[in-house]
Length: 193
View 1: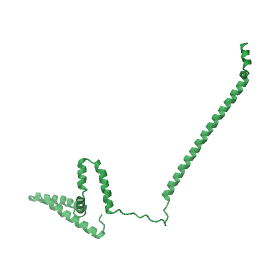
View 2: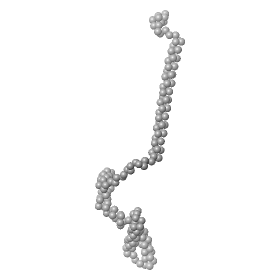
View 3: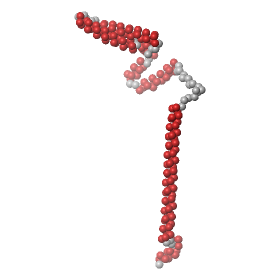
């Protein structure tokens, strides 16, 4: 009896089992459709992203090939390379040295300041270009070895005593021959190296 009174008071709550099942099936169907639509949207988005990524890669590949093959037009103005002046090179050199020296150890820093002094550099360049040519030094060392060895063998065989100047003299002789060779080679070919 109590249930009948409650059912009479609230007629909206009076649903039969069939109606409830139909409503739940409709709700389940709507949820399933929403889920499928969401999945389709995600799939479509992913496909669009994949297509865009693929197109971007193809375009980058085409640009790379085109830039590698592309020849500049003939009537384009030539870019002239401006040669830096002596003052600009000196300023750049000083800036580089000031940037690098703080990273050196104290002895290396002192040696760097000494060796990169203008006077020391000029003397070194002059000596390296004239007296201390690599060919002259090499031929001097080669002649010093060969002639000193020969003189030593001959002196031992015949009992002579050597003064010690033989090595120096052999080096100077080979060094002189190396300088003459370098001079003639430069005069004939016109190339320093």
